[in-house]
Image: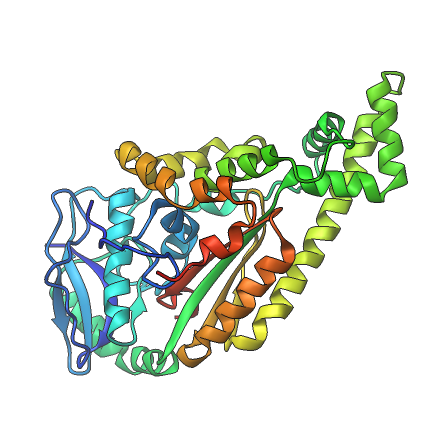
Length: 237
Length: 152
């Protein structure tokens, strides 16, 4: 029977999973597949698995629980092996690699930060700062303008938005990276201008969080900073 | 719901399963980061690849330019910088989870489908969670930063 694989931990990890459910509906039961040094946390694989909130939540809940008692290598959502034997053989074959990663991530957690700025506030600021943009805008609003003017205004404003947000992202990174052992920046999506993961040593967590809060206070209420963590080190496995 | 009950602040406890907003914000990590074991099968999950093309709204295109121009035309520069309404707008956007709200026009519908799949079947649950957590407090208190980061 196919098994869904959640995480890899050292075999000495306590794996307190009794009260947690696995993915699927009805929920599957979590269990351990163990090799000499390593344990994989698995469950039977549900017939059809979709990225439903419940299943993503179950996957994440397993990581969080394991993380509370030690270091965990979280798998990406959605990996299944043919059976327990295949899991066991991967644990054995890649034992050295996984053990090294576990050691490297010991006492470290991931924090993920996404940041967005209220668009109206940003545009207002640009219009107030740029005589040219404000001029274009007033011409358009007055009604008498060439048909190309909105495009010219939009291009000018888009460039300003990009430049300002790039600068903001850079300052945010500079304010925080001193506390991190590693970082991984991703292309921001949607309305965000920053999406970054930091690998933080446990004894640096307080400092990091204080710095993030300070950053949020400095940026003010036009900004929305969403800091998530401590998380298993998804971005650094 | 199968996630671990997580009372208290999102930061001081485990965050991922705690609330919809939190799970949404780390969706890309759960789906796109993490250990990959290539001899295992990856369950075919509609939407996983699509997350990667969930474009940022600031892209150089005619559509983006026109959208910005319209947004500028609509702005009332004379009005104060901190109209209460602004905060409400921002809250609404956050509540919907980043790829909705203002960004909508620039996003592929497919990316939203992932979000919908994620939220599937849990609408009521979500409503109550989101209404009772951060956004309400934000609306009441413009200085929302300290509120959000309470450690209880």
